[in-house]
Image (cartoon, rainbow, N blue to C red; front, side):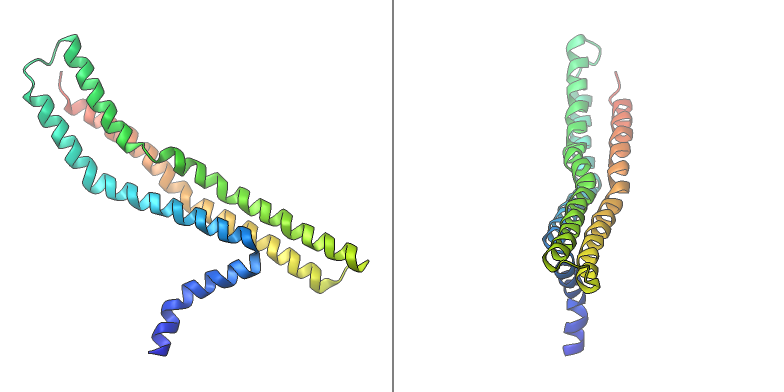
Length: 177
């Protein structure tokens, strides 16, 4: 049982060790990554379950209309498509913000680690290799963590942008004039 518990807690332990070694900004970067991937999973859920139902309801409402050719009907059609597109792109601005924010937080942590190195050198009056290695290690962990979180978010952001564009075009084709 202890071995199973240890294996189940190993990801948590690894993250905790990384936060301890990298400083407080690594925690912020992980929080950024957690929010990013929560939104990605929410978008997957939306496209898989919510959008088809909403699109079907809107299409049925559109097909139930007798008038499809007047100016008013075209405006209603456009509003329906726009409402569906708004649902598809609802969290994209936040996703597009979180992807570059992770490496910027990593950069702040890097600068903090380097400042720690320089402070220790100034206090001691010499360049102690151990203290320098600790500060440089903290700086590199922040950089690596920020880049890793950012890189994992690049593809989902691109995918959801292009999927929203493609789905909007397909929906516009289904809403016959």
